[in-house]
Length: 175
Image 1 (tube, rainbow, N blue to C red):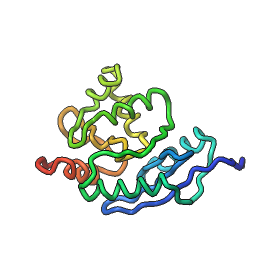
Image 2 (cartoon, rainbow, N blue to C red):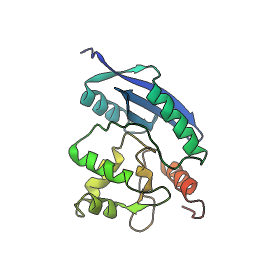
Image 3 (spheres, helix red, strand yellow):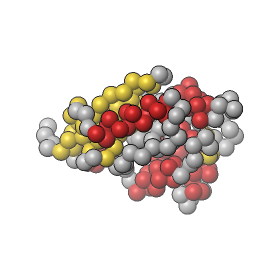
């Protein structure tokens, strides 16, 4: 096993209905994901290999800021995040994740609309896969993407959590 000298500092955050693993690398948030998601190992491996770094449990200012902002979001008092981000993925994935950041709080788009926003309306499935590979959940709001027919589609944190997040942002609607 190769020992990597670069460190991704990680911490865990438990909130009502979800538990997160948070990671920072060089003063940027690179991981904010569901601790027990099905793709946990694949996401962690992609980030560690992409940054040529290994996980070390240690707090940082970026992680503390992220925790505070997530708690505010969960309480309904925060609508956007101002944490420095570092995305790790393919150029296509990064393009999709950047488009997700453009979806305003309390609004949703379909997978087709997201594919169109990244310049390839024929790539709704690939866009959905990139959406699912998002390692910065909530911060990069992949929960705001739904199916064209209005159904929720999938979500790494589970559909009950996706429904909860959408209802938190749009209390007048019932997802």
